[in-house]
Length: 166
Image (tube, rainbow, N blue to C red; front, side, top):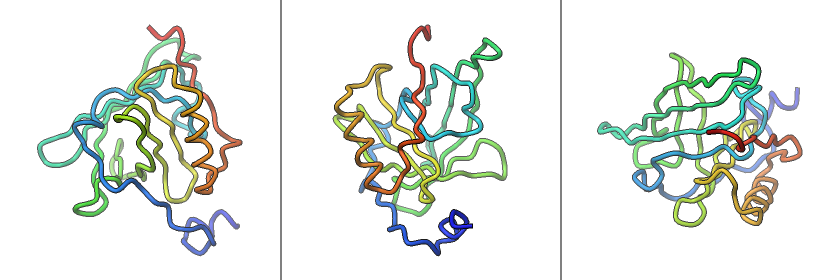
């Protein structure tokens, strides 16, 4: 019952802060999923990538790809990301299947768009992304520490296998 209260906004968690602004050209390209909170659609996935491409209408094309270890083949899904409110491109809704949209809030960007931390305001989804398959362990720990401070249960994080992917 308590998680339901938090989802309805009745919990005691503080609002989830996002980065001030996202340079979509710098954010575009391929990101590697380094770690994430468990998600049904990622079960059994290795070598997970997300590719973002800005569209002329201000939205973002999203292509998520993974290697399904059970089926021994790659699978991908294409969707779009939409700003939640005009002028704020750090809070997005991502839609892969109509009419369902999920929260995609950019919580942190490190370096020159080399690392990103993305999650949802209910704190049930969280991804740590890197431009390389093997991230700097110090930066990874810094992002995990920040996630804990923001109220995410990082003890549940799953680390994505990003070796033998090619």
